[in-house]
Image (cartoon, rainbow, N blue to C red; front, side, top):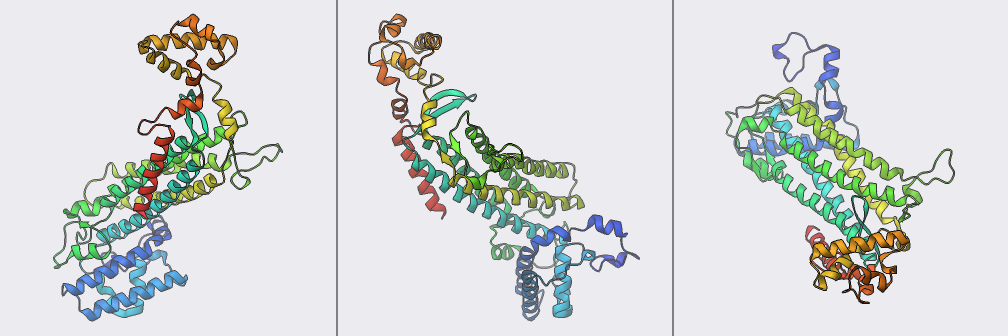
Length: 462
């Protein structure tokens, strides 16, 4: 194989065919093409401002890069594996289009800092899209919550009936999760949007560059303050993958609830035909396959995070070729996050809630037991004693196969003489929900305040 034009001067022959196939990245890093062109145009303009190149040369480079971008967009660009990666493919084609001036583009930079800036732009663009999809999903959760402020269902701990809550409150919990995901990405972007250009291979460069102006032109806020750190840092990818893992974890938690709730033994939700599948042998089946698959895809994103952590953990300074392995995992994870957010937004919009079945379930499992204990506290009974008395009441109701609210006043008074007929309104599950108006609680006013807070926040992001 011929030697590579970008570095082959030292070599009498090129790499073996198997090695070339093993080490190339063009087959996947071509996805970074537009970010690479964007960064290269900024670099060319900066070289002219600094007097390293003439303005005419810089203008010709920018014109040529625009032509390359047009070919890529139209699908006429010819990718060549022997050029190894997206960067050398673009530079080679640029030189074909504009002549020897194309060879001046790489002045003052190395592929190490070039890759760093290009990839940061790619990750930044991906995270911005994650945020857009998260905002849409938050809006969908808030909209669905607004439809169900008056409907109740069992709130659980340990997956056991605990206390009644409003369906709106339950759905809003997920809206707040995805709001945190959006905010977490915003914080991550502060560290993604730092330009390494000017670090060159690892030690900086002798050319009088202005890295800050390149950073500003591509929309970044700062530059690296240590050139060795600049070319070897992949924290920004790790943070992005962690953000993706948390997003998928939140999606997976809701998928788990959809799967449980769709089971007829719960019967809380009905999946639309468009977001479920059937069985090849059992005609009655309506399977929550979309939710199951999304739950499973969480492992792909977690795996990408663990994979890159493993790559980076033993690397000495500065750049090492191992870092080529930072892209495919993120690309797969980003695709998984984006498609999952989009599919969940659609699935939630068509999800049918069986609110009658949810309310009926509140009559099972003694969800009003805490209300009785609080009622006794209001009568002056110390809470621990009230808890003990209520436990006896639950045991009695369980023996009789009834709910607490079905015990007679005599039954209650046999447990504690301070109980009167006022116990019965307290045991109503709707009343239990209405009483919980502490900030963040499930009461109607609290739920409306949560909806207002989320809507206000969403307007600020628009």
